[in-house]
Amino acid sequence: MNIGVSKLMLCALVLSIVSCSQSKKTDYQEKPIVVTVQHPRMNNSAKNITVSGNIEGNVTVRLGFLVAGRINFIAVQEGEMIQAGQLLASVDPTSYLQAKEIADANYNQMHDDYMRITQLYEKKSIAESEYIKISNGLKAAKAQQALQIKNLHDTKLNAPISGILLKKGVEVGEIIGQGLQLFAISDISQVKVQCYVPASELQSFSIGNKVSVYVASLDSVYKGTVVEIGTLADAATRTFPVKILVENHSMLLRPGMTAEISLGTHKEKEICLVPAESILRDANNAPYVFIADTLTHKAFKMLVSVGNIFEDKIEITEGLNSNHLVITSGQHKLDNGSAILIK
Image (tube, rainbow, N blue to C red; front, side, top):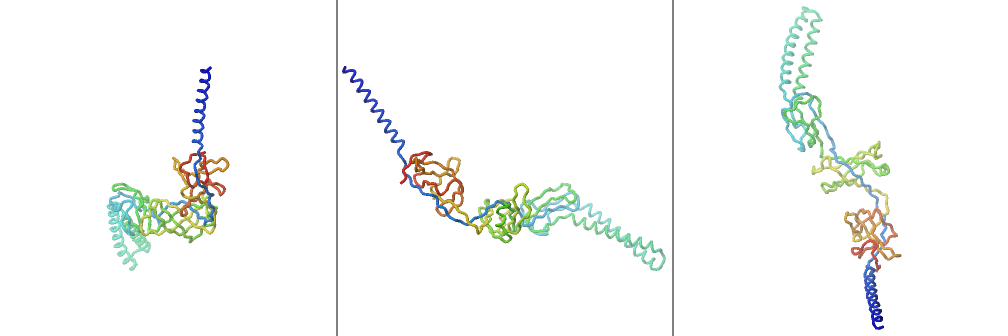
């Protein structure tokens, strides 16, 4: 009898210990984390339009030789600054020099014949047809001489504008044909940024608008002016081309760089702001906040999209509205579904 009672007492003691252990464990797991919360602040802000664009030279010319031949000299390399009138390259002039000498000799001979025939014609010693023939021959010889002078001159290629050499498409020793585009020069004392604006935003752009141009590769902001607005939409994107002129006194802006164009408008939009410290980032660097659920007293993770920074507040462009309760302190201790106690 005593043995049975002892066993019963031992079982009761074990159950009591297990029950207390489970109770303590449950109490520990469900212990809420103290947090503070606030609703997002909704503000009215001037609406900005932001589009991406590419920088190009204000004026770009593509050059080639007007005569064929072998390249015997190149004076510049890609990326070098060039002055108007500077020699870029030349073609071996030997054959053109010889052609000019032949043309000169032919012209001189025709000129001598013309002078002699003219004297005879004035004395009525030859027929008028002979005089006309020699006159036309002299004109042809003179034209041929002028052509060969031009061809000889065209064996040298000079820059028509000052700028930067964007392209050099030939090397010394290569045989080139007439009219091939071998060099490209761009005037970058001013540059143009070409961007494409959606049809819904085009009405905000007009000639003379002042815009901000941010160039990420230089981490610099430039002032620009809208100088061209296209009237024909791109067939694929249904956007309109717009060009912005930017002064490039430092010559740091180069064709091919990308830029972000921002235009302030008179329209206002409602923006959603939360304290900067409430924004967290996950392992993929995606921004998120914790939202307090007052019915379950739990915190839930919500992915958001962020926009501009306003002092100690960050704009939320997607993910929140004014009804949400954003956790602004204690959020670093939370997991998705954590129990919370709102202070």
